[in-house]
Image 1 (tube, rainbow, N blue to C red):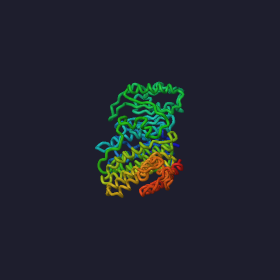
Image 2 (image 1 turned 90 degrees about the vertical axis):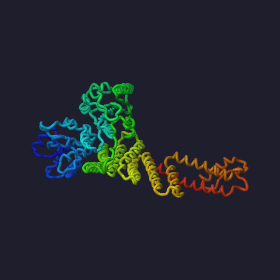
Image 3 (image 1 turned 60 degrees about the vertical axis):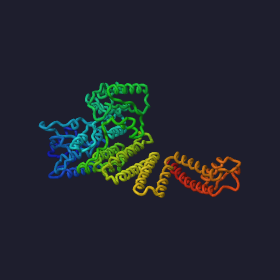
Length: 599
């Protein structure tokens, strides 16, 4: 199905037909935007365009990272530096244009032929033959980053991506998954899934990506009869993979020039050649200021891939984090873009599309979070939750991952991001707001893991929720009187039961501790200083086991009996042992039932 062309500022049908032919879009369906601008405000133009575009997208093909649609700007734009969504004046279509560019990451942009009196287009917007399988969502040419850099002027803080990554794989889902992780870690990412696209992107002298995620066995359907199994063969066909590497200016605190990772499942008949290639590649990369190596499919989710590719280490990418909060609230039109992105992410999540649709939803939520940043914490909380939900859905629906997904790093990431977002909340309620938001996000993730029968991940979420609730209780106690015995008892009880049901190992350890304490109590109240045929210590242990596990009177042999018998203290310990046994037996039965039922 041919994609849509969203023609902006249509003035002449003849000009439209000419531009469609020039860009090879004659067979596409045309949707006209802003036929009559009049005195409409930028926000009004933006909302009108969003309504029209959304209606067309719903009627078109399923969502993907490269939708096949494009914007065609027919109006003459003198200078692309005017694309600033922060401009608050009314009646400017350029502001609405910048807002649309940030709102639809998966849609391509084309421009009408520019008069010679205008300056040429920036490199990010230069037209070029675009294969139908190109994915624009990860900003491979830096168009959205171009607008963000304009926004960074005059002190506005927003995340920018100055480093370039390329994900190469003949399996589209793997390439998209790897590319999203790179984008998530601060790289503008190109996805290469065909020989034609690889020639276009990497067979150029000016192409030197900062990160390569490169599959070992590239069996492209359109590959000619050539061998690229060895890395030295690839360098002959693709100049971007050859050495020596030029030395670009250092960006921020980056410590290495390039990272190159070979990705393989390990089932390769040329394992010796792969090992030799990996060693030579790493030596070459290090000789030219880079690094790299091999990691293996399948990985245990996004955070495991990030760890294996060293993307979580500080210094390998430009500082990629939420901007520091300044002022009160994001500029109105930037907040409107972020809200629209959140709505798009929510609709895509609810539709439960394929992997590419889920990754697109995650990109929309991530971009909304970066645009709102610490300026609009409530919007940021929702965007953060949607991003993690879409990422978890993508991990659960992608068959190329391990069954057990890494979640502990995700919990740390959530906590760190919420701490940044909560900086705008008043100090008196900041911690409580952060904890409430964390519980809300973790609960949503726990439900998703339950839907996909990921019991271990669900249990990890549940344990983390209990930890956060424990912090909430501690915070409540600090605001009241933390020294009363009732408060301390409530605190101890909650912490103890949370510890019991955390893991089976914790439960067994608690039982052993209680048995030891009860045995000591039985010894001092019943057998200390008396003469019996058996061992006092052994008898005390038997009493503890029989009363705790049997939940009744101690059962011991005649060798433990003596006259006139134990006193009141002994029977008090018996009562305590019976009560503790009943409580722990109930917890044990319910816990085992939960484990067996869920597994």
